[in-house]
Image (cartoon, rainbow, N blue to C red; front, side, top):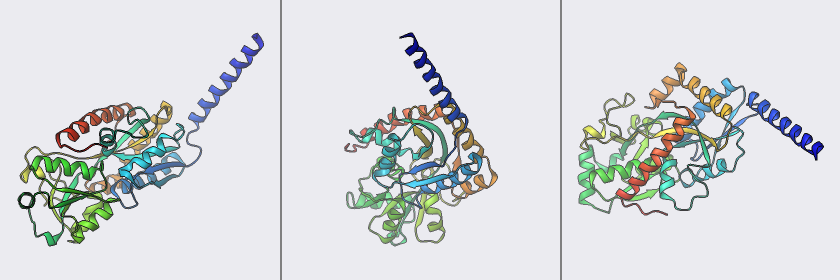
Length: 322
């Protein structure tokens, strides 16, 4: 028995030493960053920018893996089943917190199956309509929606997406009833808006700026309380008829639960380095995004707070849970 105990203790020591060595030498192979939306979406654009720069700093490729569908749930499901070794990450938005309150039977636990790494950026959304709608202001849109109560449609990238949350907050504040039409991604939602199958959409600036400048869509307002430098001539909703309105979705990186702290801290430190690069700052600013970082623990706490906030929104807006 004594010999067996000695062998067991020795094996444990070897395993612990091996784990420590693996953490010290992390990363030793490519890292996969999951994205729950199609290429070209705001989440995807941000993930590719971050991943490219992180590859240089970490000395290993950060490969973007698009798992589009169900407003990011598919990508989160993959991450929740992945080993907690730092080689699988996911870029999520505040919609990750909303889905925890909306879905009653998620295959994962939002608060227990993931570990925060860092928030990456706050990205304002812009309320846009097609030129053919002949609406020039937020007030005109609200008046039209009230005159056609229940007959107008708004687009999103799916229930739980940032576009969906922003629109529901807007509808609630404006006192209007509009039918939700989900699309697979923001690119498709914008196409539907341009084509007239839906009347408006809240799009991330990263996805909409080029279309606004090309005059394919009309920007009515940004969803924040202040204007954004990316669209200085477009008013904020707070000054366009909805005082106090302020919604700026965050985007951040998660790892599987139980990812070792040294790995989480190393990834968080690398994100801080990347977001301080002048060319990254310039790129994000051109898209209206504001870089923001947190510690892993701060991000975990923010998600907890936002899950509670999203549950309140669901209740106040009378959104049917699934």
